[in-house]
Image (tube, rainbow, N blue to C red; front, side, top):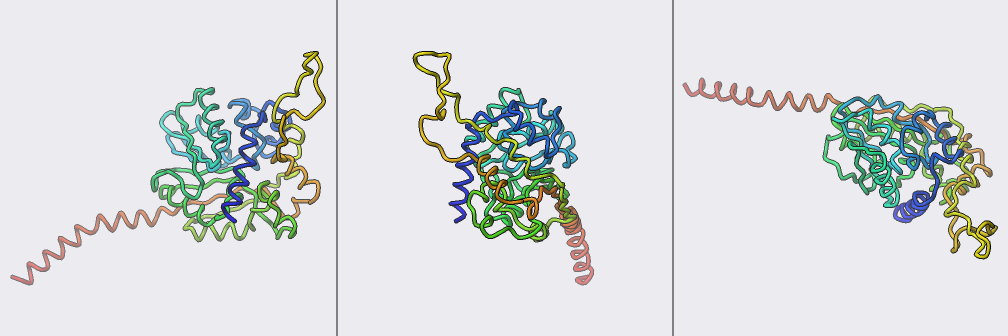
Length: 320
């Protein structure tokens, strides 16, 4: 079942990555602004980095500092990576992780066109990141952890890559109450970021179980119906032209072959049927990896030679 979910997510998000959706579409920009991005932020990065998939603005809540290593889980076209890039500066690094190859290709193309020197993107699931232990200062994510079938594994992986004292700052979808059964069991609802969401209390417990402290989950109050703003803006190609008159546009579907419903169409249909705001919420998630355990371990290592010296001294006195 987990593999089926992952393949469905890859398929839908791969189609979005290969679409023409960008910040140049009014609806796409409207979605991002509804979830906390400013117009200035959106125009400061490549237009193709924004495809209307956000549920918050994690870079605005992460307190990113110069020289830090920041990792974005489910980085898509690179929206938050590119916003983090100037914040970490030339001595820092912004890293994107995404499991959809088309998204990675789009993000790397955006990085090249934007001339970014301190960013990189890796093709990987977020529960097995190709990063070293304790190598990251801050982990951000934007409406992606809700898509992971094994969320406890993701929380443990985040704890692994974070340095002691490192922090998590995430925008995500979480539940205030149980979803209606027909929504909870819907594959379309899962891929659309609603069906896979977990209760806020379960989210908090999962982070605590992974070893995090100072866990806070705050309802942003954003209206999830904002996703409907992208309706009818996810065309797969340009309209065909009349072969005999290149000034006439043929009023037929633009694609030669039948394609599945887009992610945004699924979302719009879901929002039309159910008041998702009643059960789900756009949330801001904060957590910190404890630093004390590492300090205690370092202190123990420093004390070990002193204890050994004292033991040898005591032994020599007894022998005398």
